[in-house]
Image 1 (cartoon, rainbow, N blue to C red):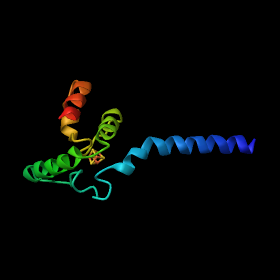
Image 2: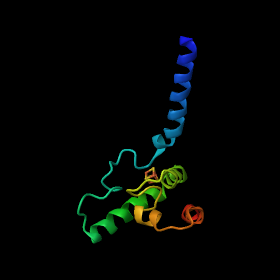
Image 3: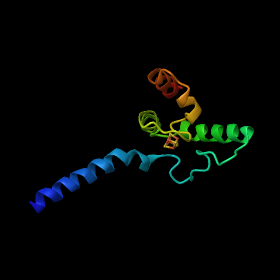
Image 4: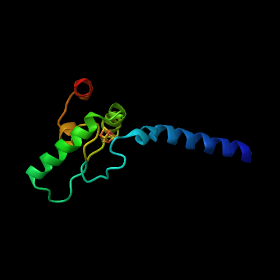
Length: 105
Ligand code: SF4
């Protein structure tokens, strides 16, 4: 039985690894989170500039679709993911259409 248990654990580990594997190719991987997540009390003008900077990075990211799918499916309540801010995600009624439009741009 120990070998069966080990196999199940290995299978779970492989599944988790594959689930998060796209992040290894993220353009933001070595940039830190400051561009993508707002600090407490961020002034509106600074927020817009920060979010635009993040969106520019996302625009060239090879795993943008994976990232956006993750953010929409979880759903992620904070930060820029896949080129969408948290307000854009929260305010979008038809996420499928918004996703298609964003990824086509
Ligand atoms: S789409 Fe943007 S937030 Fe998502 S992994 Fe790429 S650079 Fe990071």
